[in-house]
Structures are given as structure tokens and as C-alpha cells.
Image 1: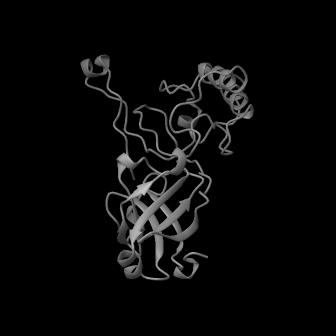
Image 2 (image 1 turned 120 degrees about the vertical axis):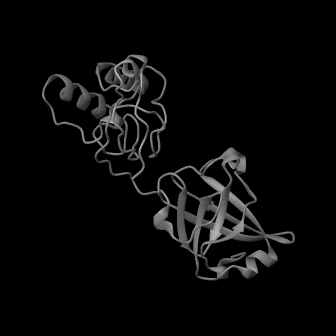
Length: 221
């Protein structure tokens, strides 16, 4: 299980104590009630939990809308401000499910992320090469993070672009030789840095997008 470092303050160092390490389960920030949507029900759930003995959240970290490491009334006000007065949106991870990069003491024992909808949009001939266009409801990584196209766990292309800057669409360019060498019917994935055939070693909400098996028959269809 992935763990985050505990938060160590100066006072904590004086007493030689730090906050405990906590699991970094993926979640959507601001979604305290865990319905995969940030709306009015979330600040209401926060206030009921804090002041009326409402149901304890299973992912307290998701309720930390302002990302200050605490779950309190400020989070409910932050979400209301975002929803109704044009205030700033909750910080990352929002609006998609991912892991919290911030170190804090809020736990997230349980959160069910909505499954990403991934699709091979097209496979088309472009000049002397082949373009494979993929779409998802969970944004692809920026090119600086080196997303790669893997077919059957084998690197097929590292040349990618986001058309019109749209992070939910990515186009990989392959040579004819690379496309011909890819195994028809092999699973198509987008990964980071290097291809892994063992997908159980990868974190599904951070560095892995899974598509249907390659169908070369849709080339230029």
C-alpha cells in the first residue's frame, strides 16, 4: 500500500513526535459523501458530521476542500463559496479521482472512485505512419511526464500529443513497422516511462489507463 510521509512540525520535532503515516487512497477532493460529485450535499454532510453527530465519513481527506490538513467548518464554507459565489475550486485531486500529494493526518479508509471510460477512438493512416487516438474521462498525463503507448506490455510509441490541448484525448504516432509489429488482439494501455505487462504492479488511478484489445481491422475504418 502506498503511504505518505507524516507531517512534522517544529513543535513535533522538539518532542520527537510526528503525525502517523496514513494510506494514500485515491479520492476526489470536496466529495465528503463519496458519491463522486462535489455538490451541495457535501458541505451539508460536513456540517452534519461536525455539529450534529452525522455519519462519520469513510474518507476524511476528501472532505478537506481547502487542503489545509484539517476537516472543519472552513471546508464546508470553501465548498459553498466554490459552488455558489465563484470561489476557487478544491485543490488536487479535483475534479478527477487521484492520490493526495499533500502530507497530512487525515485518513481515507474507503473511497470508491468512478471507473474511467476509456475508448480507442480511431486508428488511421497519416502519411508514412499510423496515428492511434485514445480518449478517457480521466485526463491523461502531461507530455512532460512521458506517457507511452503499450500494446501487450510492449512499448509501441512515445510520440504523443494532446489535440487542441485537450487532456482527455491523446494521439500516439507509430511508424508502419511499429504498427505491423504490434500484436493484434493485445491489450492497449497508456503508462508512464516504461511498459509493464504485469498491471497489478501499477496504481490504477495514477499511472495506468486500460483500453480494449488492439483491433487492426479498424485501421482507416
